[in-house]
Image 1 (cartoon, rainbow, N blue to C red):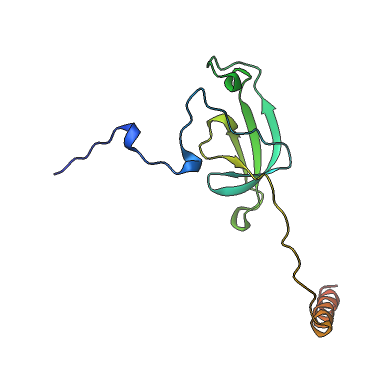
Image 2: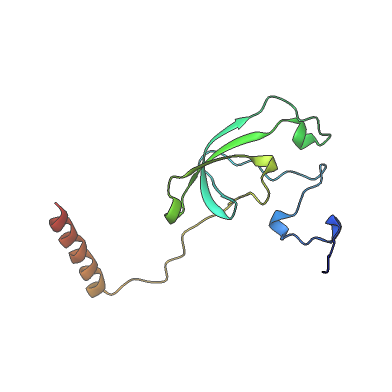
Length: 128
């Protein structure tokens, strides 16, 4: 039987999940309504509560207290599932800074638009 041991300094973390030293800057705190990635899933922030108790750590970011962030999933297989995390303690949590729609590359031919509109009208008639 072979046993391998590794010291923590030899572990390889993905850059987004690398542990932070107490003096490193904490990831930006999300705002209500922002999209975030937590535990490799997409969520929207529904509420944030800041602790009024200091953590006692020397870091200036930690002295202000921690944030309890309430999240709601936007994933298809877990739509509306809720999760609460302490933002500063959640490994790999990140805020989606800029999300935008793709730039339009042109217009559809009129026949395709007409087919789309007819299909939508048929759906309305069938379900009403």
